[in-house]
Image (cartoon, rainbow, N blue to C red; front, side, top):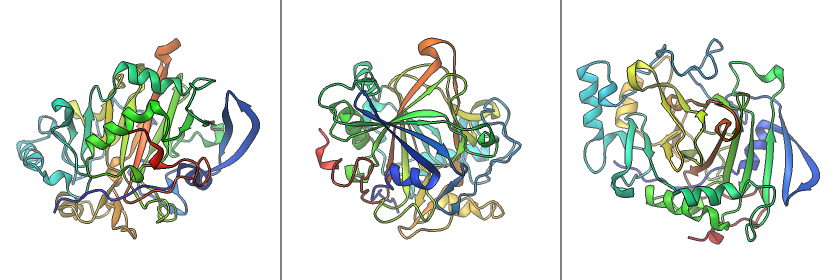
Amino acid sequence: SYHRCAAPLLAGVAELRLTWSLSLDRSVVGGAFLIARKPNSVGRKRGTATLSSSCSSSDDLWDADSPLQQEWASSLPMPENARDPSMANRARNAMRGAYPTALEGRCNINLDGFDGRVQWLHVDPPVMLVDDFLTDTECDAVLELTNVSPPPGVGRVIKIESRLSDSNKTRASASRSSTTWYVRYAAAAVAPLLNGLLELLPKVALEQLEEVQLVRYAGEGQGFGWHEDALGVDAATPEAGGQRVATLLVYLDECDNGRTLFHDLMGVNNQRLAVSPKRGRALLFFPAATGTTTLGDAASLIDDSRKTFGDAYFDDTRADHRTSHAGEPPSGDGIKGQKHIAQLWIHSSEHTPVVFGRGINKHAEARL
C-alpha cells in the first residue's frame, strides 16, 4: 500500500541538547542570539541510540570520486547507472505507475508538479531533485535572513556557530563546522519555501515540519561528515512528532564543490551519488520508512548482517541506513567559497516547536 506521511519531528533545540553542550553568549548580535556550541560526543548518535551506518573509520570524510567500496544489495540506482540489465529492469519497474513501489513507506510525492521538473536521482532508497524550486528573487530574500540585521517583520532569528576541536575531527565521527540560523514560520521570506514543500509533498501537513533552518558552510574547513538524519529512539518522541521521515535541502547559491554526497548510493560511472549546489535547486530524500516496503524488506534478507533498516519505533517508522550522506566543504575565494542551504525536516506526525520558546513560534503563523 502507498503510505502518506503523517507528522513532524523533534525540535531542533531538543536534538542540540542531546548532541551538544550549549553555552549562551549573552550579547545580542543584530537581533540574533549567538549560541556557541561545542560537541560532547559527536557521531552517529541521537540520544542514547546509535544508528548503524555503513561508514567506517577508514573512510575519507568527503571522498566522492572513488568507486563504491560497499553496496547495499537492496539498493536500486537509476537504470542507466545499474551494473547489469537485471538491476536496470528492477529499477524501471520500481519507478512505474502513479504509485511507484519504490515510494512505498515514504511520503506521497507530486511527481507531476513543478512543470515536470521533479527528477529521480536514485530509485531505492528514493532520492529526488527539483531545479528552480525557488527563484533567484526568493533565494535572495531567504539569504537576507542571515544578515547581521534581518529585514523588518522577521522577528527574532537565532544564530548558532558550531566548531569542532581537533580531537573531534575524526573520520568516524559526524564532524560538522557551520553556522545555522533558526527562522520563525511567520517570516515572509520562507513562505515560498514552505509552499513549495507542500506542493511537492501534498499529503504532508505544515505541522509536521521542524523549525526552518538556514545553514552556511564557509571555506574548505567547513562541511558535515558522514551522518544520518534519522533520530534515535530517545529523540523521536511523540512531542517531537516521532521520526524524521523526509529531508528537503534547498541550495540558495552556487559554489565551487560543496556537493551533497551519499555514502553507499550509486551515481554515474560506479561513483557515489553526488548532487552539486545550484541556486534554487531542491534535494529530497527519506531518512526513515514507515511500515513495510516491498523492495527494501525483501532485499534486507540479503543484507541481513548489515540490517538495511533500524528497529521499529512507536510510530511504525524505521531508520533507512542507506541514506548516510555528507556535506562536502565549498572551495574557492569570496562568494564561491560559501554554501548556503535551507533545510526542512518532516516528521511522521505533528511537531512541537520549542527553539524560540513554547508557544512563540507557531505553524499557524506561516504566511501561506
